[in-house]
Amino acid sequence: MYRDLHVEIAGENAWRFYYFEGRFDLVRFVKTVQEAGLFVHLRIGPYACAEWNYGSVSDFNSLFQFLAFGYAVPYRPVEDLAFAVARFFEYGGSFQNYYMVRPSDPVHQQLGKKLEAHVYYKHSNDCAAFLANYDSDSDANVTFNGNTYFLPAWSVSILADCKNVIFNTAKVVTQRHIGDALFSRSTIVDGNLGVASPWSCLYVEAGQDKEHFLNIGSLGHAALVFVNKRFVAFGYGNHDDASFSLTQKISLEEGNNTLDVLSMLIGVQNYGPWFDVQGAGIHSVFLVDLHKTKKDLSSGKWTYQVGLEGEYLGLDKVSLANSLLWSQGTSLPVNKSLIWYHIPRTWVHPGENLLVLHEELGGDPSQISLLTRTGQDICSIVSEDDPPPADSWKPNLEFMSQTPEVRLTCEHGWHIAAINFASFGTPEGKCGTFTPGNCHADMLTIVQKACIGQEGCSIPISAAKLGDPCPGVVKRFVVEALCSE
Image (tube, rainbow, N blue to C red; front, top):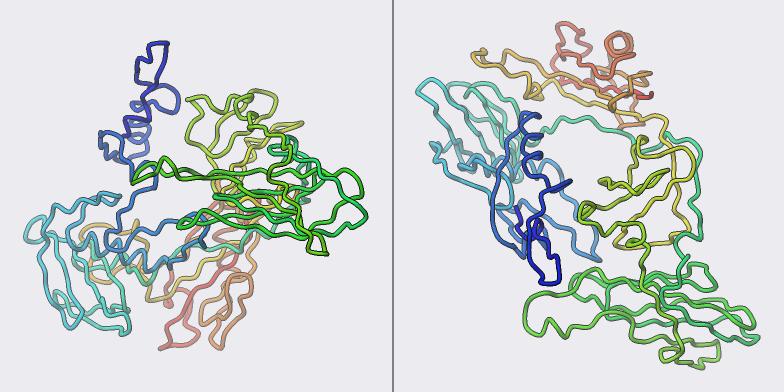
């Protein structure tokens, strides 16, 4: 819990008080977590620069990967992330977050080269185990407690009862979907919304030569450029070097033209030597015609305006802090959380709606559009040799007494309206392009009976019950379905 988040400065004498109302209500938060059946790890401490400003700088077990400004979004396979988390708990970890607690000492067993087990005992006949293959290339079969287990390369199997595998990090079984292809008509956002205020404006006189090159130099961090109220360019720096130079070919009209520049500051250095003299913002603007005649606009009569629309709407209020989106219908703006620019339908009101987006890397605001999703294709791919769902495990089960399941789940309020593909065997392709393989048993009728009209459904994978189209071959159960309202 960050103390500075709850501290307010008020009054002429700048006295302090602690604010715990609205979104800062700690007691309400803890009770909400309890109602959800979860636990809270409460760490009361002072201002923490690394965690508060930069999302932590820890790199325990190569687990965390953070997006740095100006760089590509880091990609990490979910199987590798699961491996890192499982290895942490295998070695005694008990709490997974930036600080990652490791109070336990499990019993270690070497099972072979780059193969090992860590066992946690509650008492002599009650235990849980982690079986690890940390060879990045070779699969392996291991023997543990008299039973044989297959461990794919670079994977960890979790045995909740020291017998049955409930999870393997190389076999992450999860529902998939085909992007966001099912939408109704597009609603174009008012193109003038993004340029309603001239942030830094200059009137440029142009002759008969219409084609020019515009060069803008900035110490950071980003800038949007508009000519005659039309978006023409966007430039930005990066985490290591915030400065950048932007060159763009533009077309001017004869006579007066307007040049608008929105210069954006992502954040300033707040520690280290000479951090208080680090510059930011635009430092030069040049216009170059086709004859390479350069005109310095830097010292021209610019009109500057600080964006105060947020203050006008009340977005600077403490109760609305630390969030990414505000939406407004017929009432005052209401703070909402934002995930991948998905706007829940309950946020949108009849008539006009105001949407405020804070986008780090900008783009062309005139191209913002809204689409209404009408359905979603979902897929489930489960193999015969995949572990059963972890939530199906129960104590005192016999070895290998459970079977995997294919599961489908729609968003809340939606239901499974159609089954587009269902096969048990060796189907080929991926979600959206599945085709039957050389080994194929049509499961369409079985899946339709179990799933149509339901918000979610599950079907156990058993060749004895489903029929075996190719004995001796490891088969997959593949389903593609459509969810809709």
